[in-house]
Image (cartoon, rainbow, N blue to C red; front, side):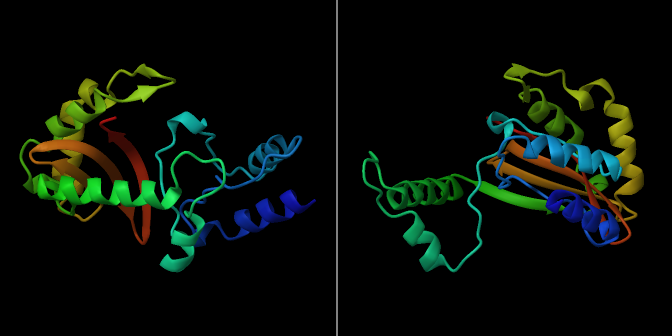
Length: 189
């Protein structure tokens, strides 16, 4: 009953949100199947991602002091979480000095060679552990047309992460009114 009530609420308020992640939902017995059935009943679009396909992340859901305390040494662990966190933070700082940058490109039609950067990134994309056929590479002229047509109208945004001149991550997003629609994500493993 709880699952149906939650999904009914999500269906009623769907104009107030664009994406809801349920990655922390505990799967007990058949709860995942019940969630899928409720989402289908309400005609809400959903996608299940196997754990191996998810990007690693650190949820920022508390003050930094609490997050750091969660990462403190646990008995039986080879390396404590705080050490791992600091090591990754130092690596990120080193990458910044090597030219790591993140850009939000609001008018992609003004940047030459962007479609080729997407093709290079997408050619490294894996699905179910295997290299997948790049989608953009099959239709480069369509994507260039999208950039040229929708970019100046403020309907298309791109997040691009680069290490020097080499793209290492991208996210293509459509903007319709006050909503953003995630279209395509690719990153260099």
